[in-house]
Image 1 (cartoon, rainbow, N blue to C red):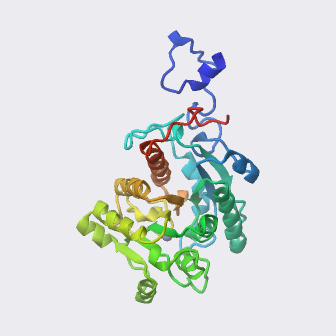
Image 2 (cartoon, rainbow, N blue to C red):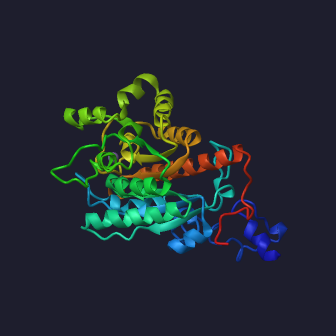
Image 3 (cartoon, helix red, strand yellow):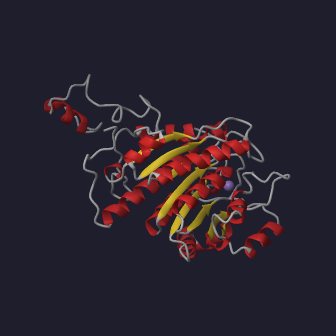
Length: 358
Ligand SMILES: [Mn+2]
């Protein structure tokens, strides 16, 4: 079929000699990233729970555009759109890091945004919880785009509920521990999601591993609470002394000490603000972008990932979209590492060969 041939042709392999028609070739997926729909990598949009259950994709992107829980600079509500837009790749991209075209191996869709409204934090968390639960119960691994870090409380709670009775552990990259009891008396804050997850019983404290902590927060009493509850925390000073790869290897051994499944939470402020300035609470002295991307590949290759989020991208403070691009690549590295695992375990590429609407 001529149509079929046309649909298989990507942006880099068409010539006039092979019957290429420059006016009708390329569907939306293969047209430039700035043309057409605005879903993540222009993947199919499946916003409806029944459509998700019918398709059962491997991975579903979820937007959580909520920033009513920030303690300092607001703006992360605009993160999901900025992350989705932070790509210049059309069609099926090829990971040079892992030697794989991830969408040829995994069915990835964009499940759209949780239907939040402003200034209603409890409702916002509840619609995020419901949206992530819909995705996880449809058999897809949710990758949630924040939003401020408070969204990890409803998101990881939903994943824990969906995977029970299997146990969920947390690998958490962040400049901040986010395990305070409250910020100015507010329990649902972006400084508290990890404590809420532990107190609610969604994730056991000893199954929490944190990487990249630095700066001047939290106070000693919070660090004492973390130690009492068994959290394993790797400070930035340890990365400076031992290197990121060795620290992440230790973190992985700790994360896998008990739980079968891992939720990966990436606060973009774990990266040095010189490389990721577009965030609400920038803390100097952080990881390099390349160290974080490598760490994400290392984590996803080693654990069974049940869910992930990338949070705290606040585009208004960004420069040349560098922070949004880093967050976009955090997602792509995780998807690519999952695809490489499927291949290396003897899996097969997807029968359709492409990630499209069909
Ligand atoms: Mn955080």
